[in-house]
Length: 255
Length: 282
Image 1 (cartoon, each protein chain N blue to C red):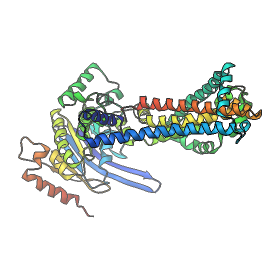
Image 2: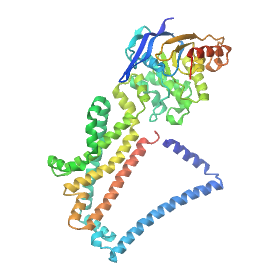
Image 3: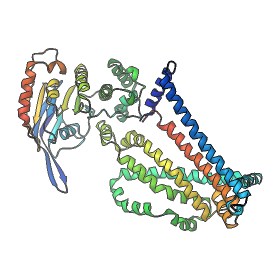
Image 4: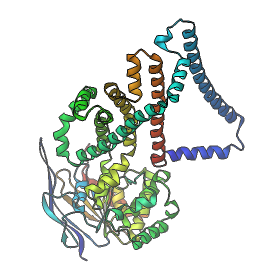
């Protein structure tokens, strides 16, 4: 299969008055169509920076990123970005929040409105469409945030610590929820997380970055004997512990 | 705290009112009694103060020529009304305050947008803003009068000068404290700088702008009265200065009281506006 995301020799340096910081160095990996890939690494290794580079929000100081073979020169409608918090706008209703991306891209058409309504219906939020975000639970808000992204019909989803603002129990449920939605909508996903369990439970592959300057240390293929895998059921498989140990060793954490 | 949550709590409260416990009844009773006694004492203080003022003046304990007294204030008001001048003076002052207030808010917000738009411009202008913010704007009064001429225009410019810089700084601060991640969200959808402004910054700064409005209401009255002190042929500030010069303290007291009422009405107007605009959303 042809890769939808190719990261080639990407490096990133930050300039400041106190000197130069090399955040990322010589990063190489790719993501195939329909694949779910996680990026884990110690804090401050530049995981989120890497995601911002892939999305075209910032530009790397060396190397290139290709989306379906085309060089990234700015934000692209092929990409949907999910941030750490849901960032629903308090002053907009759920429906207006879902339409935000379409409004910005000036593509509010009849078809787009229907798609938004259909997504809200499918994922049980249609009856809340005229409510304001503060009337919804954390899990529901996260689901609205995903629909806000999905309604612009991106090919690739970038999830930047997208679950870390949730409490642990909610997080497990939302992991399952979002995972099934992503699979159902047939999206390619790239998740940045500092949570090893989360990365194994959701991904086909896990990319491990080293500490700063971040570079690819190891790529783990997650192979499970589990046909109907969900993030929760993956956590119960015997292989889960094995991968956890491997990645944990790779992370090489010292306090 | 969001308004809607409060609303919901109130609704829950209503639903339960059919079968409430004795303790809850007692609690509600206590809250109501407290509210009533606060109101009563407020009225009492007002009444006693008026009465004391009137009696002391009648008994010559204080000299009503200097302190005036409620009955004289009332008579002055009736006199002004009969001359047809009461609403003329009130109208002029309110109009000047309102125009200055609206202009201050609009122009201040526009300047804040410009400063946010260009970080370079903001850095360049910073020392000027600091000086202008520190300068007592009243000192500029004579300059405005010479430049613009003695009249309502100079008074409005005075009002504008007093409220403008505060508005700029308040609104700009609102923009700069807006969650960067919300801005990033708009950018991930390919949003332009203008869209960041209209989709995030302005709506998110609504509460800040309303807050600036509240400060501005007070400041624009200061500007108008100072302006009228310096130049004018009509308005409440004119009546106060004129009354002071000819030793008609009745006129001064009457004007101050009317001024207090007018300023309160305008402030409450902004509070009402806040309720309408921000309701249910924050």
